[in-house]
Length: 326
Image 1: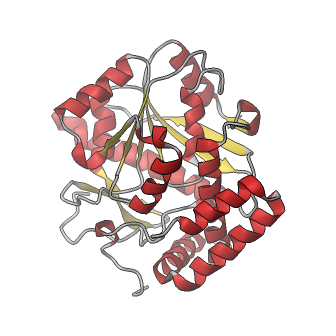
Image 2: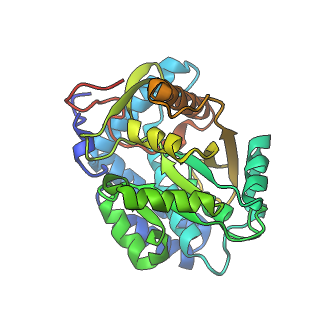
């Protein structure tokens, strides 16, 4: 796959312009759903033909997936359609005040999600790992009173990399500026931001961080972990942060019920971390490695169930040029 730039972490995400998706969202508000679906397919076809990097990255992911799960079919265009629909649905989640997403749209799986809801109702905070897989924006319901079983508003702090998808961030600032009110750039974590994290947890809130991206500032340590049978880089700092905050750790995933059509129905999964957590210097790296292994195992498990909702459109298995700490 020589067409994929191996230094993906030094660049913004492959889909540079979000204007076609923003236009599609406008169509969603004003046109029938079937017509919006047709427009999304057209936009996706445009990117499939002209965005070589995203296309090649998708094919590599699906080839690795098929090697890991031989029964899976290679359908790169379907994955790009799914991604386009997810962007429209995310914007819909952030801005649709007339018909906001509600508990009735969700199907909750497993006892851990109910344990987390009870924990938040008792004002005990948690650290939540998400991914660029499915639609993690439904987590907003966890922080909203009476939306997912929580009895009051829950403080939330989201860790993200502002250097990635900056074009998308600009559009979101225009249509939903409140999205950035409680965010921290992972490249700018300081003692002051650590105090914000701790304060959020102590107030019974949640700190949210994606575990499937390494920061653009690649001077940070990298973990090497097998994903779909091949070594891939994961952020040491994200898992280290989870350990430092010493709060219960959950992995949460939200997936659309349909890949290639607009839908406001989602499947929500929550898994509580089972790894032994230790911040002692002697056992810290082992705890971080175990936590990452548990997270990646869940990624692989859900890749089998929702193979086309994987939205990392770059060479996910490429490492920074310097030696990995894995």
